[in-house]
Structure formats: structure tokens, C-alpha cells
Image (cartoon, rainbow, N blue to C red; front, side, top):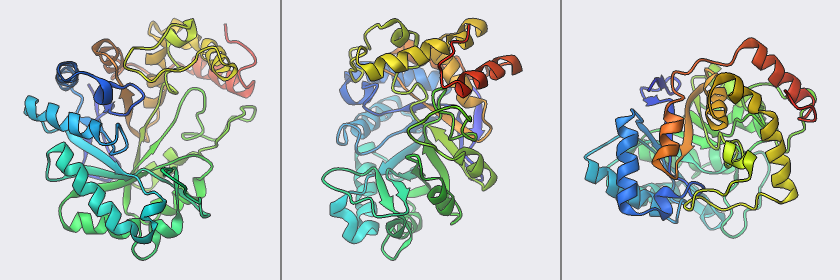
Length: 342
């Protein structure tokens, strides 16, 4: 396992990180003994960074990870998040403090190394409703009683080390404004073979629902780093998805035969030249692509099984793709995946 520093922070983390979200399902729906076995194996393989959130299983992922780490007598680098919903907008700072205190109880620790705002920044009022927390206005980040105030309270109390936030796409200007405060050392962002815009300018022919505005490169230039979530694009960048095989029983189920799924599987199939030529799986190729960017501190894996963990952990230290492979990839993006690379 190889390690990277998170921007200008003092945190050094494994470049393959352990995501505890519900898509893979292990830390939400798995049995205790398999959680112990797989987390224990991750630690043996050198994984030192675990990414969690209260929203994962309504606190279950934090509770389960805390119980497992206690059994294993382990204290890796821990990240958790805070979700800010409509009901919290009256006093965002106090909600952040309360949320973190709940996370610390569930995790069984007195502080977390990284706290991230689970809402992405928005220049306008995102008009949150119900349980939604996708975005948060810049005013609620930066204004009195906002997110920055809550982060500062937690730092003074020694309950968090560093802070970060999530990028949701089409928010490059807002991401840059938050990074400009100097408060944040980490962004969580999707950066995939399907949509590489978080780490480079949008390829001229590629059609994307969201342009992430090369925020990974900007973060690196301003003392921050990226942790990439969903590098497998919710599991579509895998050999199983290309072949139409069902997902692991613990993983969130998707209908692989809908028009949207069939389109993603077609695109994934066009990318298999990277895995064929490199002697690896498509999932490994997807992680290799992510780790080629020097602004990425960690690629977050969601693991349903030990076999998946070992497959992805083996990516650490693999060489980057060749210049010729990157040229073919560029051509595929510019053709919006309409030309299959042989």
C-alpha cells in the first residue's frame, strides 16, 4: 500500500480508502463477523483511512465501524460528515456540533481526523425540502452561525482535526470560493472514466450531466486534496456490470436492463481496452485512472466482500496508463463513447 498526504494537512492516508456507505452495504447490512473479518483484512493490507457519515444506514455504519475497530484495537484515520437539512438552517453551526457529538458516540472516539459537510456548495438557495441535503447555500456556509462557525467550535474543542466538503457538480465557482477561505483541506468528489471533469477540462465532445470544473487540480494548487467517491460509478465500471451479472447480495440493487443502465454498460464495455491491455480488471483500471491524478489523496472503495477489497487494494502501486492508452481514452471521450475502442 502506498500513502499520500491530504494537501497541506498533517494527515497521511492510504491511497485506497475504505468507504462505509450504503451502496456496497457491508457496514450497513453486513453481519458483525464479516465486518470484523473484512475491516481486519483491510488494516492488514495497509488501509488507514475510513470514510463514514451519519446518513449511512441512519447511523448504523458509524456504530458498526466503531464496534469493529474496538474489537480490533485499531484507530485508523477517521472521516465522518454532517448532513444539513431544512430543519437545521436556523442554526447550522449548532447542528454541526450536535451531529459530530453523536458521531463520536457512535464511533466510540473522542475526535475524528476529518469532518466533511455532506452538502455541496450552492451560489443560490437550493430550497431544501424534507430529508434532502444535496446542497447548501454559500450564505449558510460562510455567514454568522453557519458551517464555518460550527467547524471552528469543533476545532477549538479538539473534536475534529480538519474539515472538508462535498462537490456535487456544476459548482466549480462555489467550490473555489470555499477553498479560498483556507478552512478546508479535503473535497470529496466523483472522478471517473465516464466523467473526468473533476480532474481536467471537459473533453470537447463529451456530454455530461454535471461538469465538476477541474476542482481537483484547483484544490491541489491551493493546499487541499481530493478523496474520490464512487470511482466505479455506482458499480457500472466493473466486469460484472459489463457482463450483466447481478451484484453482491449486500450491495444496493440496480436494474441492469433499463435504458440508462444499458447505456452505462455500453460505455463501460468501450473502456475495457484499458483492462485488457493492462492485465487487470475493469474495476482496477477505474481506480488506476483516479490515482494517476496527483491531486487525489485517496480513492474510496465500497466493499461488499473480502475479494472486492483485495482486488482494489492490489491497485496501489500499479503504473499509470501509457500515453497511447490515454490518447485512445481521449478519443473515446471526444466521441462521447460513440466509437468503440478496439
